[in-house]
Image (cartoon, rainbow, N blue to C red; front, side):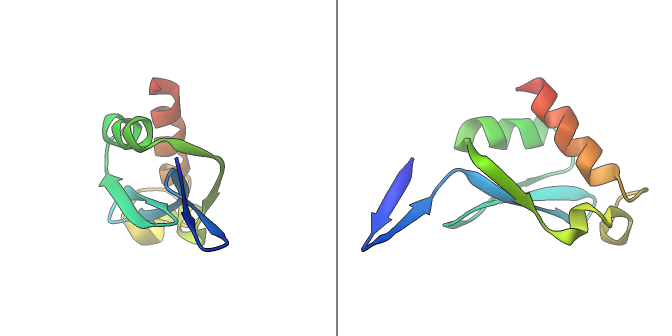
Length: 86
């Protein structure tokens, strides 16, 4: 779904991710849409809100150990597991 605001089209589907406190925060152009620490929780938010054609990730997704994950690839692995559930 998209919202027209003047000449700017705002995407309401998830289009941005960041690692936060051992989980993933999911954003659209309209703001924070969810946060989860499990693949099931991330998958639920992605399925409920929708996933944009292009999803960008904050550098925290690459340096996840600085944001509550055991390893740097922990956030991306969580995201990939969630996508497999959808």
